[in-house]
Structures are given as structure tokens and as C-alpha cells.
Length: 211
Length: 211
DNA sequence: AACAAATTACCCCATATGGGTAATTTCATT
DNA sequence: AATGAAATTACCCATATGGGGTAATTTGTT
Image 1: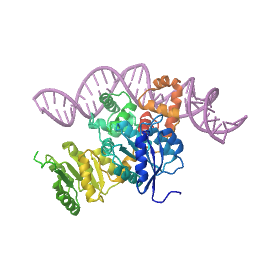
Image 2: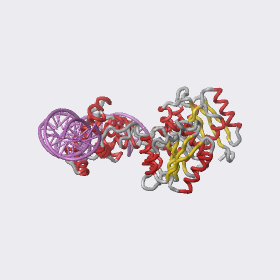
Image 3: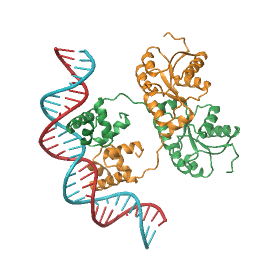
Image 4: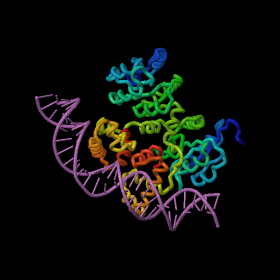
């Protein structure tokens, strides 16, 4: 390991020259941090960041040619021990959740004050996940049930068995009712969920957290 | 509104008398905060917290009779404008994600220092979601793909259409191949996913983030 | 008491699905 | 060039599924 011990190696991927320079200067001038590599496009970053052994990479999302999200996806496979923090102005659900799915461990908006940015870099290498408060709330809210279920208790019960791939007869036996009853319930479930097949029902059940 | 303006009203639900007292004292003695209600069991809290107009409720999880998670679920429906922060020693996935699904907006471990606890209370009413760093990482990691897909590109493509409830013929037409080809692919998908029906395949696809 | 919703049950029937088996072609990696 | 995985096509058959309809009973809430 050729790193100075205790010094956090950071790289920046950001197409705005001014912001990129500000970030690298800020980080490199801060005690305990170093920033010797920065990129104005993601394609170059992806091809060059391998083997440089960075602790943290700050990644913009809107970038020429390749998005920062795509970049994280590719880089996370090549350098899985490096932590990625998105640093962006985007705060739509797609940007947020696609970034996290791609492998980002933090998500900060660009109005994050310098001191907090440095704090966030420390936090992510200590196993945390720094997020701007409003982003954190969005993430947390994604776990909540959207709205209440249109299904009755019995229907919900049957929907759950439906999701397990049980057929009419098995469901019927398990609930001590006839197969015809199960079919009747399923018809009602489909009507209420506006679907017309098991597959769609299962998908909706999981996505809408009905089960 | 009978509140003092600018004063944050907090309630505590915690069965350990010592901790409960420490928390209420800490909060009530801090400028800008008040804590006039605390409960040592969740059942009482649920029946009495309605109409008291709290801004934030700190909720333990392990409680006699009714868990804090169940409590949040019930209370969040009755007082949706109140924010809930779990304050607990539990850091298993079930405790975390069940709490968030129930409607908690924050999740702190009990070793959180007093100053940070007060900061977190402010953060949650400002639309944030305070979390202990390790909890935040757990939440973020839940979005990552578990491991790589065992499916080929074509199979993944078909699995997606399967999830939409498309039948063999529609899928075949869309991919410009024969229905028999689609069937063959689906058989391979089922074999690789260890399932034997559309419903199970859809469930696994979504849960394992294969689509 | 009255009414809506939920639950139970049954019919017919066309189509979709899943299991089994087999063979050919394409394509990438060795 | 060769080996193997992936993609492609095809067939048979028993069963499951979904759409159509009808109707009685129970439960829950005005």
C-alpha cells in the first residue's frame, strides 16, 4: 500500500470545471484528505480509475456520454472496496434509487456545505451512508405502504398464497374452502387490482406492498 | 394551537425507567424542546397519545405486551403528522425494515449521544430521516442487487415480459421468435430460478432484483 | 331494520401453462 | 478449429387458468 497512512484518497468525477476544481482543492487542502485524480467525463473515469486504490469517489450524475449512475455500476464491479457518493443536483426518485441500486453508498446534493462534505466522506468509509436529509426521507418513505389495500382480509390472505405460486386446489385445502370459492375470490382480487393474470397480481402485490 | 411557538413537543415510549427518565429530563431541559408525556408501555401510549399534538415520538421496540413497531403502525394512522423515531438497541434487518414499513421516519441506536439525539429530533421535523450511520448503510444496501443474475440476456428479457403478465404469443410476437422458443426460454428460466410457475418467477424476479 | 360487502359455492368452456423430449443454429471463448 | 453455452425451433399432453354467469349465506355498518 503506497498510501500515506490515515490519508483518505478521494477522486472526483464532475463535468463543470469550476465545481470540479473547487472540490479537488477543498479536499486536497484538507488535513487527512488527498485528491489527486479528477475527471470531467465518466467514460475516462471508468477506464482510468482501476488500480488507483481510492477510498471514496464523488460522482456527479449528469455527465457527457455516460451518466454517473452507469459509471458507478461499472466501477463498483471493478473496484468494490471503493465507496461511491453521488454529488448532484438531481433529486428525482429515478436518480436517487437508480444510483443506490447501481452501488452508491451515499447521496448528497450539491448545496452541501464543505465541512459536511468532508464529514460525509469520513462517514462513508466508516461504514455509514451519508445523505442529504431530504434524500434520506425519500429513501425511508419508499418503505412505507403507499395507501391502504382495496382488498378484504380474506382476499389478502389468498393473494399471499397466490404469490407463492400455489394453485387453486392447494389454496382451497389450506383455507378449508372449495376451489370454486378460491376462484371467486381471485376474480374479485383481479377486478379490484385491475389485473387479469396471476403474474400481474403478484407484481402489483409486491410493488404496492399489499402482502 | 396551545403550544408555545417554536417549542418542539416530544413524547417518549420506553420501558426502562432509568432510560425513560434520562430521556425526558434531557429533552425537557433543553431549550426549544419540551417533553411532558412518557410511557413505559406501548398499549397505554397508543390509547393516550391521540390529540396531544406531539411533533415527535421516540419509540423503543422491545416493550411489554405490544412492540414499538406495532405501536407506530397504530399511532401513525391516528396521528399522521407526528414523526416517529425508533430509539432502540435492535439492529437486525427485521426490526429496521418493519419499523420503516410501519411508518417510522428515523432510526437511532441507544448509544446515540444526547446532542445528536436533539439534533435528530430537529432533523426529523425538518423533513429529514435521522439514522445511525450503520443503520443508514443497511437501508442503502437493501437497494443493491444481491448477486449477479443466473439468467442470460435473452432470458432476463423474457422474464421482464413474464412479469408484465404477457402470454407466450405476445412475448413471441414482441421478440420476433416463435412461441415454442419463448416456452423453451421460460423452462430454462424456471429451472435456473428453481421455480415452477409464473407467479413464483415474478416474485423471485422482483425480490432478487433480477428485473 | 336495511343495505352493502364479504364469503361461500357452483356451472360451462376456451385458452394458457408446465413437463417431457429432441434437434439445429449461432456465437464466443478456448 | 473446437468445445460448450445460448438461442432457436418443434411436438405431445394433462392440468391450471381466466372469463362468463348465478346465487345463497354471513358479516358489518349504518
